[in-house]
Length: 299
Length: 120
Image (cartoon, rainbow over all chains, first blue to last red; front, side):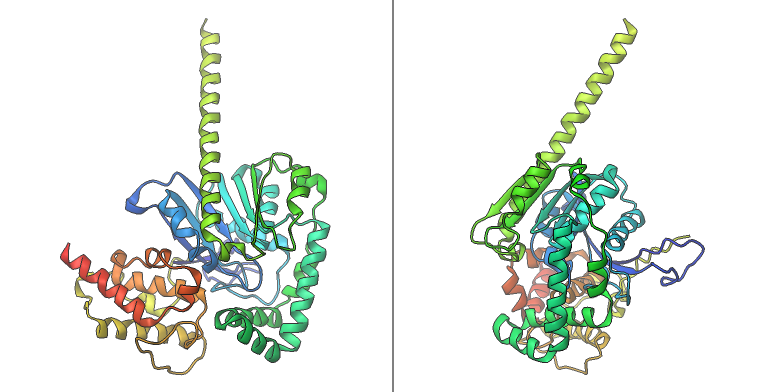
């Protein structure tokens, strides 16, 4: 376990010195027995009730066992990361990821895996730093389009009304109907919304145009639950990014990662494995072409 | 200069990195150690001294979140070294089982790991 300070300001040695530097809780899992990893996967969790635990207790150990270097982190305000009072626009979350990978010296292309809002962060990062992304796999997520903003703003408004204004009643209901753990997560979400500007900041995020989404060059896997409110999103994504692989899981809703971790694990493993083999093929082709060019020069 | 703080966040994790040889492999001793780690964690949340027994459930009784269990994994590794692999332990459980986890289940797992390491 490590706490990584995303502070980019130079000349300071305190962890809280920068205007934007926040301490992020990071967990890494490596392949067993000291085997060198075949690739790096960075797992990005969702908004409000989520944390890296959603990966740690589902797919992360198996991804590491399959030979991947797995990097998980709690996004600002979430889990055991710092919870600054403000600074929760999408771009800030993307900058956190950028600085985190810098701090960890992970410069090669990585596979980004994002759940819900984490998937939106993955899309945004792939647009900002295309050279650093080998591929993105998103679960129940969409890029930061105008319609994404409308939906997430609506959700945050509802959370603010229910969880913050009527906190005690809402938590009692969640506890009775959804169990103690969900109630605990809801309590943390209420605290995040109450003590920070997240409910104002996320809706003030910069959106991307369809044109910008079309410019995403890396391979994309998008998984949805058939019963989720996001169902249908896969058709739009296929039309905008024709190479996208979409999977719709029947009988699943928005919390498909928690409900069907085995299926998600299989999808992610075969996806990353295929991308790595493609990469190898491309590298070989490039080497062959270079060799051919050399021979041509020599003759 | 940029700061990369590799220190674990909880004071309990600042215990000696690995003292496997000195770790007692019986349930009461392990329970006492894990209770200490939990108390440190609960102190951070401003919670008062809560009695921790083998039957105590992490979520229902201690109000811990799943992310706290991840942090506890860090404390376990700091105390027992790599011979206690929490990630491997939870990989065999589904999310509901993790939520229902008792302190006793974890204690028994740690004892099993320590004994297995000793026999190697």
